[in-house]
Image 1 (cartoon, rainbow, N blue to C red):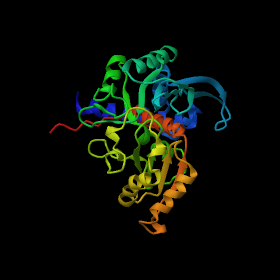
Image 2 (image 1 turned 60 degrees about the vertical axis):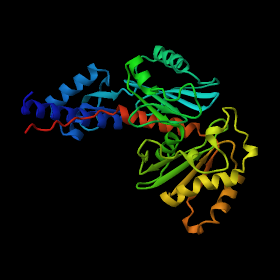
Image 3 (image 1 turned 30 degrees about the vertical axis):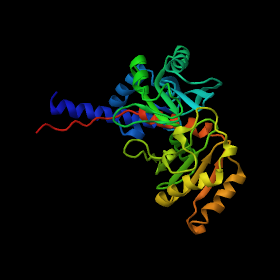
Image 4 (image 1 turned 90 degrees about the vertical axis):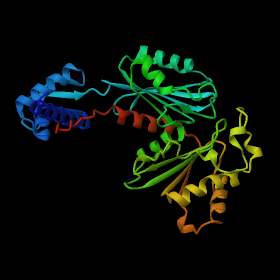
Length: 345
């Protein structure tokens, strides 16, 4: 391919992406309005719109009166169900949420499943059930306790021994021929917290999740981006020196009544506060309470002045932030990527 061909391809991709972004934001618009906003002439915009309609991304709504021209104009609607995301969130060892999202992050369906996700087959059954109902599913998003080790693609999770060290995401991508993401529960949740609130730019949110049946974990979101660390293991607070030796904990429910919870929370959150100086610390988990949070504040104030204490937010149920964050990350993955080829020297 010549340099001229590369330039033509790049210009077309940029124009398509511009047109797509404008209609997605407006949801519905006339051809004249799209031309004015994108700066594309009539010939170029007609060609691109025809292609996007053929692919099902744009839907022709017909001739309608235009406020801009006062004359009949062709209107188009962005088809947010052109591609769908299937998100599967493992909340506890016996609680799973499955949801289908459109390209706006709006849910077409959301269901809670009371089952134990112990094997790959469990997830395969869910994927196949939803793919049959929603053929437009274009990406699989999984969220669970643990993390995918960077470089090897293997799942490291103390909570699911039958899945540990499995190339979980690769398995599903190869089996179904779809792109996929695998994210830890609390990393997805802190992303959901950041994205669904008016948090502002350049801020840092840290989160700690203490579930009933899983080991605790933390997540860090800086300026809307997850901080992952070298191995994707940032936030694995189970490696801290606490009274609970998590690796030797049984796989049964954690008896939180036998744990000095205030001391444990302080030991896990203090390093996050000291090294990250976050604007907000989010505590997730139904085993905690408002009283627990107040006791944590008192404990932290033994180590630092009140001025250095972040805002502490307590959210008993992680499910909404978890699902919203996982879908947000999935939709970012689905966004078209424009490749700039380096000119040969």
